[in-house]
Image (tube, rainbow, N blue to C red; front, side, top):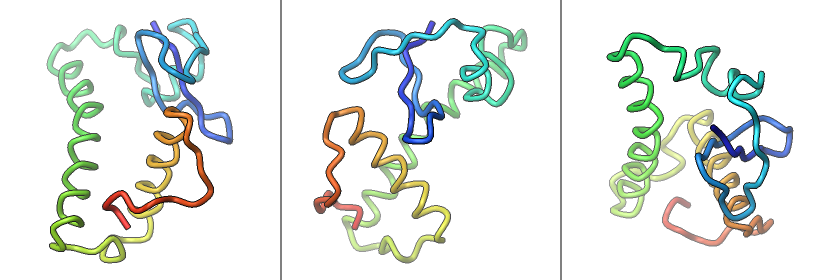
Length: 115
């Protein structure tokens, strides 16, 4: 399987089937960092198909939630500061990780609708 991206502390933040720009590290399927990313259960080790579908859905749904928050902020339905501090922190961390993947890890974050 996977090519992986990591955060500044070395934790895996993304897993890809193919190499991506700025994502060239390849790990074996049974690597401890891969297992940690999936919460201790590798997708290929899940025999319950419903659980496997739900796990994949969870991974896919994370982006849906991010996009929904972005839409609500852009339409002024909520403000970023309305969100709990832990949620804001997680959003900022994901934005930072995406920036690193794209090769644009600027110290100053431009207004992209979230802030």
